[in-house]
Length: 495
Image: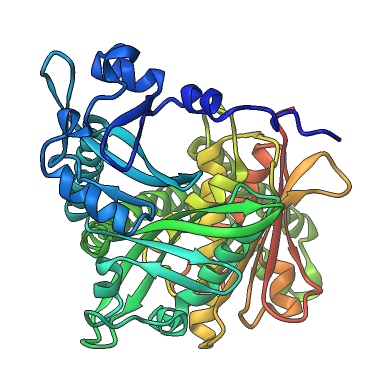
């Protein structure tokens, strides 16, 4: 196939160039100038041809020209401030100059290309301003920057990252050293988030908080890490992100959480005292009557030959009646404590799970490794978000307390969210790595006032089940797990 560009002349290509160009012979005279050069220097073609190059460029160019012809190789001159050309009106224009040689028929020519230095200076100034803004932002926010190659697991980092990881100036740290500084209890959660970030089916976002220990001074710090994975042909190519030291924020949060926990404890004690007082008041009379009727029944039974069966019958009937009265009073009291309209809303159950984890950890239940298995693109659920959140927090707290009491070293809690395979509902599962429940305990776990904890009152799971059922779902315990305790609940989708 014939090349359509083969017949294009040098003059055609020369004149089509957007950059200003002159062709100068070995004696220093202009033999050709393109349209861009004529416009830049305000010359006509007739005026510029045959003009000495020194008339256009200051005298120091003569030395450059002589040196160039001794060694005619491509080079670049200027830094945006030290070279000027003169227009026909005498105006000085700052330029940078590119020099190339063209040899034809035994003659050597210089092809001079002019680059207006204003654009060069503006670009340099914009770059310096951008770098300064980034430096000030980094200094104010105290964050570091990293760039990770996920295939070779090699990464670049700035001086702030080096400082956080205890590195020394002019000495790099390896990826192995980088991981070794991460707190052992946080490595599993970080790896789960990293694997999720590497998954091309996701959005490539990387967002996690973890602790590191400086190997030089042993100081532990909390870091917040945010990044974005770039993919190429469906494969992870580059993870870029920032690392921010949030230790002071964590310390402040811990102080506030302790104060809040103390306040909540006092409040709960007051509520428990008032509730107990109300229950005692409502049950006192029926229980006293039951006691009296029971004494009558016992007395009747002790009579010779059970001489008064009618008296015994009335006593037992009284016991039944008063027991029913006590039960009714208790149910009325609980109904009063839970009265109110159920306010529902559409929300993302995955986000609710993450919020519950944060609350549980803020309340002092933070010595566990969360393993999140969340279904992507989960439809919104329709329920009371605060109530569902309370149920999740209660399940997490129970799991942590069970593992603490058992002294479990592998303290993982897996939280899974998926669509229930048999119903059109969201299905959440909370599974710990504790000792689990005995068959006898499992049968009574949802009974009010039944507890296996030395300081518990046995109402958490009973209330949790009531809340889930009030929102149209179910809460149950999986009794056939080999290790640990597993709780499930369902919540209806908004659609």
